[in-house]
Amino acid sequence: MNYLTELTELFEYKVADVLAGRVPRGGWRSLGMLREELLQAPLEPALLRRLSEADQQYRLYQKGSRPPEANPRASFNGPSIWTAPATTETDESRAWEDLQLLAWHHRTSRLVSVQALRWQREPALAQLRVLFAVTENAERAAANTAQSVAVPPVDDPLMDLHDPEVVQNLAGALSKLLLSEQGRARVRTALSAAQSAPFPRHADEDVLAARIAAAEREPLGTQAREDLVRALRAEYPTPRDPRERPAIREAAQQVAAFLEPLIIAAPTPTLGAVPHGSVLYARHPAAAMRAPDDGADVLVINLRGGQTARWRGLNVSWQPIGKNWQIQVAGQVALLRPSRDTGDGPQSIILPETQLRAFVSGDYLMLRLESQAATELGTRASLGRAVSLLLDPGGEYLFLRMARAAAQLLRGAPLDLPSLQGSSARKYRDATPDALMAFARKGVESLMVRLGRTDTAQAAQVFRAASDALGVHPVLGRRLHEALHVALRSPETLSDPRAGKNLDLPDTGEFLSVLMGDDPLTLQAGTRSVTLRLDYKSELAVIIPGHAPMILQDLLVVRVPDLNLILVRHGQWLAAAAVHDESTDMISPDLLEDGLFSTRH
Image (tube, rainbow, N blue to C red; front, side, top):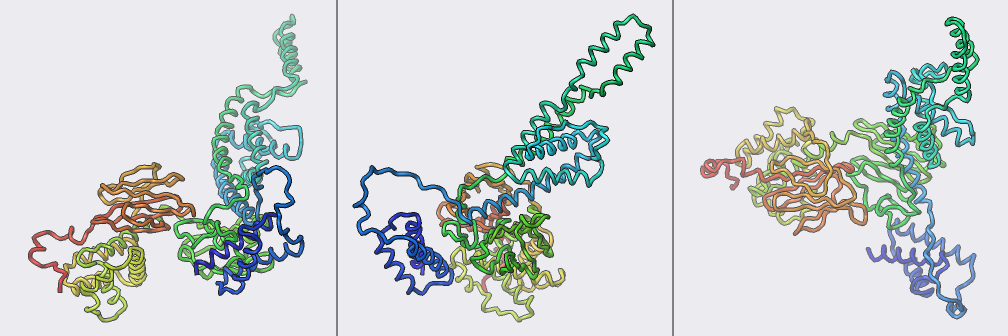
């Protein structure tokens, strides 16, 4: 049915030509014939919805416009002038920009709030005093108030920056300014002014200095001269100590060093374009996501385009409630309102082991998963090691057969020995890499669920019985049990990610952590190279010479001769390891000659 999808897209393109005032590609007759063909075709619900929307736009155009000329070129007399089509924004592109801005603003607001509380612990409160002046002057600039305020002194009686509530209100006011592009520009301007002129000199400061100098030249006694100078000073406000300016400038530099990276990270306008493959159930085919990316922390959904999704192991469903949306995630139900209408920012969906932030813009939803990236990636890496063990072809896929035997015993079923013989491994050798990987992962995850309900000592006996049933040494059963136990109860800890474009994987089988960017990444495992790069659909493609390109979502194990490459991802954090075969490495040659560990029956 792929041709129906292509024909529907072709119809959408032709209708777009008509709506733009152009002759449709292929002519009007071609458009009419294609429309009749699609209206009679057995389309899937999603394609039927797209056809209905495009056809409705076409019929509305026909009602409100003149019929096309038989020969549109006949009336053309002027020179041929080509102009680039104007970039037009759509509801989808506006919602995409809005969601990116809301998510950035939420993260920025939390960082500003935390940093403000840290600055409150400074003895002189220099950074907070700068922050107050910057925020106040930026707000005054928005209100077109010419009079600006200086950075207040330490003992200003009108300031109460020792109060945490006051500090949080100050951070909230600054965050509100950062939400708009004009506000961010005003904050930058006010911050620059605070650095150049922390506080102005008093207008009468020079007059006072001149009068004091004149009084000191008067032929008076010491006490009389001091009384005169004191009287002169009482007529003028006490000037601020100029030695305070360097300290304020240094504090302003620290505030700028904190705020500038946040402001630079603010999303930029997309000019009406939405990245390829970035929205689930997107209206435009190019922006549509094939399936939710389980390796990403963010999922953007066109709520009008579907009703359910499965992402990161969570079942998500939704339905409209007026202008709001009701969403259900893993049994939790929440009412979502447009994020700009809620004074407290995004709504939270609390789950047993994690938390989701929900941002809503019109009919579009962004779900952001908030979890510990290092912990989750470590769990995924340990899961990858267990999957890699099952994909080891040694001993006619010994570990995979042993895992099946252990699963039968954990279910309380008798062992089906004929189905566990070495001859049963033929189906594994004939399976495609993707199918075998999916089968091994499903087996590992199923075993982990059952092991979570089983006592550790009892589980050890099960794997001992599975190894005995296959006629292999119990050390191999313990090896499989250990890999599953680590993945379930004590996942490994990964090192902090490092940047780079060409890196070598450790020979020890340890994971290498890398922070992915937009540029391709090449990993070297001995004589083999692995290239990871974003494809045209913004999916992370894995390129290995001699293999078909693969897509890495959250976990991928690639089998190459005598080696398994384990790749795991959490957002931009990638971890990779090259794991050698273990089934024969763990057995000494002497024992193999004695036949104690034979896998043949």
